Length: 200
Image 1 (tube, rainbow, N blue to C red):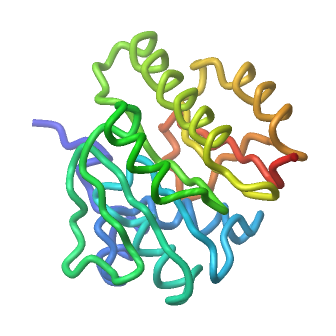
Image 2: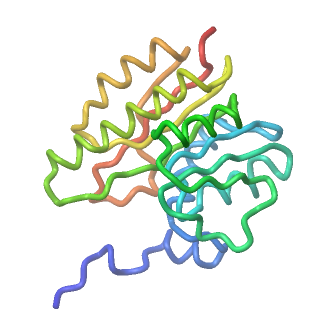
């Protein structure tokens, strides 16, 4: 049976394992934050689609440096043992009425980050549509829960209405742009939409 390149541990996967992160996605956030400084010590951060927990753990270790709070929400529990003391873990649908109410109680936030992706089917039209829905919902959370001057990053599959979402973000943020980290796989059609400095 042929082995997919995704079945092999590439440079970023190996590095993540060495550094104690559950997934290689941590280096996407590292690159994004290095370029745009989304998060700083003392911030309150909402991580949507947080499992298995690499973005949450990196935010705790390297960005907040023990000074701030992270609210991490996902349908699945975090694969972090122990869960860092700066983290409030919520397991459930971030867009349901019940969980959304909990997110409101924990907010507002200085930054919202999301590496959330839908369960993929292999049908690009279906997958990009589902990704667009997730991205739209995170933008709505930002409109509700992000403080003035706050920042946001969300993942979306290319072809999933990213230009329309960027247009909406430009009405919310002083600056909004698309960004593809080097840590994204070459064959991936994901990109990240970054919103900086939420307007009043």
